[in-house]
Image (tube, rainbow, N blue to C red; front, top):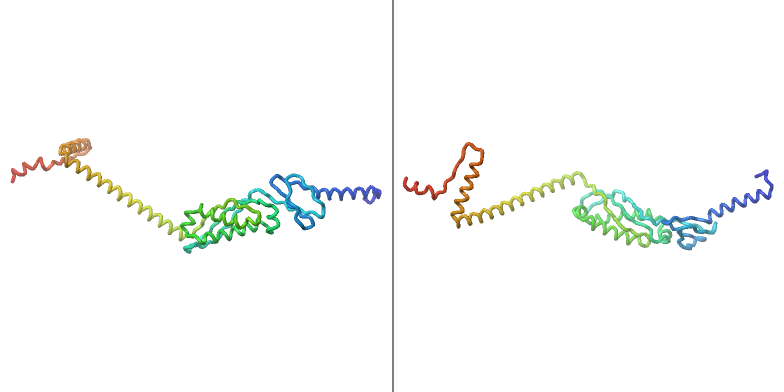
Length: 254
């Protein structure tokens, strides 16, 4: 530019400055973004989406993403109400509903929400027993979501869902639970077997009462049993005789 005329050099300098100022004055925001504009340090409004214009030097814009954020909560050491130590991790779904509050009420809403989720997870599960953590996850998820949503509401952040992903128990506790489950299965098997024996005895008692009232039925049952025995492939067949048939012969022997 040293070899150029002074007028042309000045025009080029002005053009470069104009392009730089124009790039600072025009901002394009996507459909899922909003721009929180500050003018001389004071907040103006949340603008967007589309093209927005700023006054260079005196205006500053902070981009805010309105999409739902999926945040993993790292494994937390939790001691339950019944003194069981375990590691629990979770996932939190949240999004910004008020860009202005998300910028001015908290320094970094992503970090703040993550830290709050970790402490809330330890606090809520620490008040529950192990059986509750393992068997009532839906209720615990709702409790975590309500507490987090209430705490992040002043930041303009909406927590829509919290899900406990995994519960890691010590090896000794896993073995104890396996033994407990095995004992429970054996108990149920014995109860089912006892109920089956009770039902069978009731049926047999009813059948005996019917046969006692109808001697002919007893004879028919006897003949049916003999037919079934004759169909069996056995070299020895034992045929029982009713006592009322052989009783006259026994009386003569006496």
